[in-house]
Image (tube, rainbow, N blue to C red):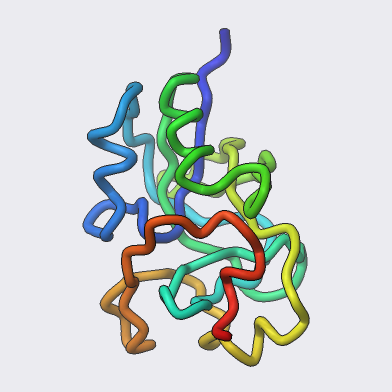
Length: 154
């Protein structure tokens, strides 16, 4: 079986609020390296929970910085549950340019359905996410965000 690689760009990165879901939950993971997407995407912070998310809109936005991990099927299932896949997020294989100069393919979670006004409710288009970044929108832990309408302030 081929190894499973996943690219994380938000709260699952090292030092971010949900890192423990990647490192401590069931399954195995191994850090491969940091890098950026070959394609451009909109990375925004949205909702009352200040959730970082990439919208599935290739070619718009920036190359997104993040981390690549090698994981097993059990860890992928944990991440699928955390990311509300496939209801809220889809995951697709994307090409990642590692800082080492290598190029790899990895699963990347993206929001596949959103209202047009999500850009008005979000921050600027980011290249790199940090919960404590200059955007001033620190992540708020949410119990269950599994439906697209929960991404909007009501």
